[in-house]
Amino acid sequence: MPADATSPDLEVLGREHCARLLEDHHFGRLAFWSGDLPLILPVNYVFDMQSIVIRTGPGAKLEQTPLRMVAFEVDDADHDGQWGWSVVAQGPAFDITDSIDEYSELLRALPVEPWAPGARQHWLKVTAARLSGRRFKGGPKVPPDRAEGP
Image 1 (cartoon, rainbow, N blue to C red):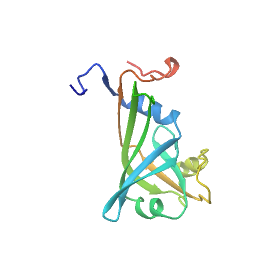
Image 2: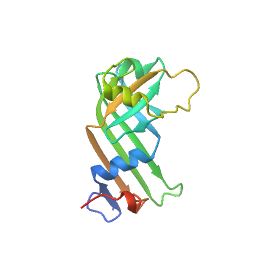
Image 3: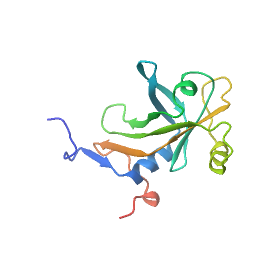
Image 4: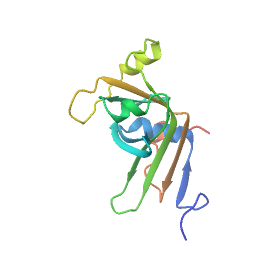
């Protein structure tokens, strides 16, 4: 029988737990529509508990995501399939490269270090309007000093 939301092997994660997992990781996948097809691209990012910040160069991410709804996913799993988790953020994306508001300036100061070669002089922000996550068969928990409140 497959696990579902009521299975002891599958745990639905709360928003705070999802936010902590996003904050603790720096490699994920940005999903968006590119023309008539969905596209998913790996990216390095920083999460400030409100927004996912990505540096990019010219191309599909910069051309197709600003002012559109996107999804962002980060996950981890045991190579043997013993445990795993995933977090999905959904919300609007914005090109904040030239934005002069204080929040955009703070986001551009975050240490986003792309692995991909080449100039990455443009900044994208994805507002995490919705956060959802699941963990199956236990998986790593948020460290006790960062655990969710009551």
